[in-house]
Image (cartoon, rainbow, N blue to C red; front, side, top):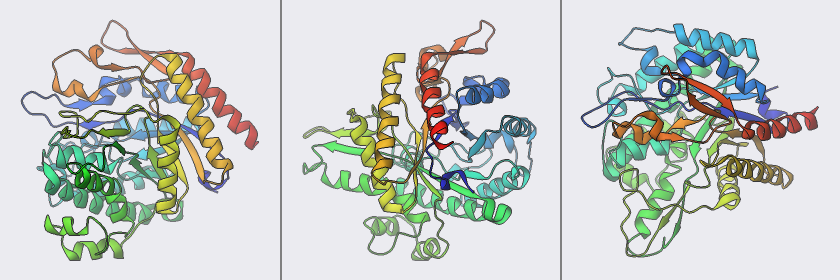
Length: 419
């Protein structure tokens, strides 16, 4: 029996795994594993997750390091990490694509051969580690991918506008579908897929004439890649005309419906301080890090909304695949307690919620590090169960804080109830 089928609420953690290795003037490549010293401390890091009672760990693969040149594969470090997963008994939920592509892939997601390359990478991973890794997220947060790479021009290939966003959505969805089919061919019935999307919400003056069309498109776009991969985009889909106008062909839309894939678990990422964006009448907000819209803390109300919406839209069990607040220990514990209580309430009301993920296990560094020359210490985000502490030699120690104790209490309480 798969863990998502046993009726329990399972507790998970994640290690921040954003990889954007490309750089241009004024930018630095970003690799969160390097920034957080995970490449060196992977063995003890997995042990930390076990220590606080996690059953599952969302963990990503640095594709650009695994495949440094076309046709060249270096699995040596990943081999060691997967061996450590076997030792600990943690179940990996493998993030195959958490933003970055290899450096040699010209045009990144806009490269016409991107789906071929990402599919080969996924198939090779599944074939090599299928004895320990059976749960996969083909693309983490495809709406963020599409916005940052295709609409805001923030990440490679730096496309902008609705046309760029539509192009990226189609490319990402094509690779997503091909990846899931390839893994299923390798692993057969053992393969399970945790699709993960960002739970973005829009509030405020959303009906103002200057915002109405933008809000409608953004709300539909939040579901677009998942709608594509699950075969839900036909001529009546609100974004079908836009896709066709921006280069997606009718044959491609037919292909998605004919090759549709489904989530075994529909994951939703929700951050109470950042997942709800506010539109203000008479004010232009472009969106994205360069021109952000203001946020509104909608707390557990927003959490209920996104989990219920995704469960109903895709007809699959749902999992909170990322959540936390950046703040003091007390603020983090308060959100942990409130959000866990909300998941228990939703389950008691009949919503099929199967998992809770605190993200991240230890602190991380803000993506704005990519656009400055400041040391990483100036970009530290206090989010984790463990603090990152400079060791004086360029490395980072992990210091347990009381959020870890609170997480362990919830995780072990859920396990005890099941037992």
